[in-house]
Image 1 (cartoon, each protein chain N blue to C red):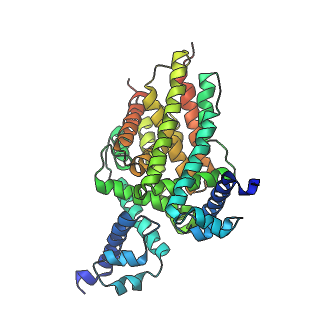
Image 2: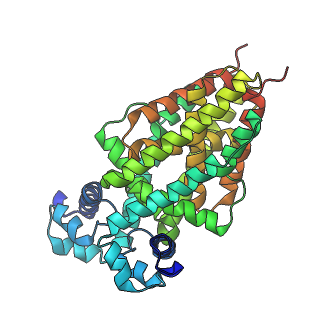
Image 3: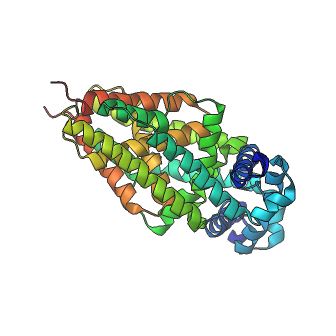
Length: 199
Length: 199
């Protein structure tokens, strides 16, 4: 079996084709047929794997979220404050290239459909829980190390994640990178002036 | 001309039908045809006014945002802190009924499509600017009255609005009212402990 025929490579190619179709057409206009247009292997191979848009996009959402989770798992900062900043850099990077913006647009479109698709709902719930618990972990490590004040880590994590998500929502839908930069600066300010303890 | 035939009433009836179709089917599956199914007047009257989904939904988005703006304009609290809380009650009510959740779901779906529809983009930009400037106004009134600390009002407004939007995004897509309540409590905490000045 050559690389091109291996199952991983086919799945990866399907995900890339889905990504291109979604960025080009937006969620409502994306179909198995225009995903096939972006697929560089045979159409029948795609149709063999998927026969409806919802199950393909559910796998695609899993693919996107796995990527985000892998990025979070990659963080290996010893220092709790660096750890927190590294998570923020994944959630709300002050500067994003076109791919970063498109990735987050695709994610928002799928999220907006979660009330109608149980599969999307499950993926997003898992991913939100993981992100919040990573934030909680970094904050608690900081409290234990005496670097952060004894805040309610759960509440701070919830708050920071919602702010990041809302800033992304506004920034990527209105194509306004300033909103993202300003909100990131505001979160950084909060970490420096309210969370960090200078002794 | 009876009430039922007056242009205002027809427009209102079209908007209500659009709202019902959107809540029932979600954005991608909403069409002029299933909006007509929800419309209690003749289909031809609807088709006379609109021949494509995008322009009907652009008017519908204007209708939703006008409602939000009217709610903000209605606030007449003398006290700056009450004024700020009243804005927050519109943006992020700690408790929402089904209609409140559906309204915000519909808004999020339309927002997620703004990158593909210039008309949606314009409406949302206008509305975001108005909301942020209302928040700035309340904060600056509080600073002038000596009730709030001398914060950067623009930055605080941006931050509060993004947090509210992100909390709504998570709460309404994952059907999790706790996220909304917790984030509202965190914002209220912030207002009490960081913004308010006790002299």
